[in-house]
Image 1 (cartoon, rainbow, N blue to C red):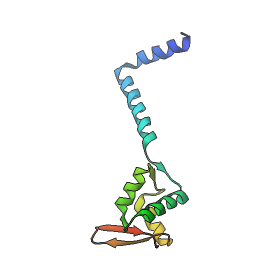
Image 2 (cartoon, rainbow, N blue to C red):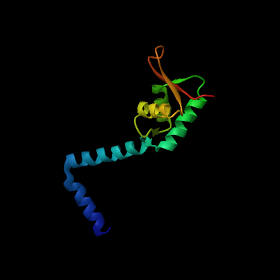
Image 3 (cartoon, helix red, strand yellow):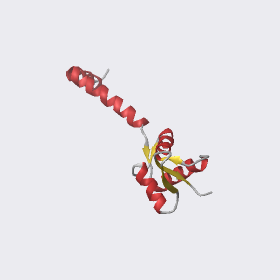
Length: 110
């Protein structure tokens, strides 16, 4: 054993219960952050959105697209509705308000 090990052990003893709880919480947060969605750049997000829409047999709702991106552990540069609307304005995807789905639906021209 060396002095560094002794210093670390003494440091942990001096933390007390609250300090140990905080360290445990921080460890859990870093694990959760590791598993959380990776924020994509615009070009990569566009390709992933287009891939999701091309695989779909019918137009998808904003929520369905968000669910698909969450499965891939990625997220759009902005929030998903804003990003999808930008793509619509640019002519990359098609979208409209759907009364049946009670929200926006999105698709790509075939």
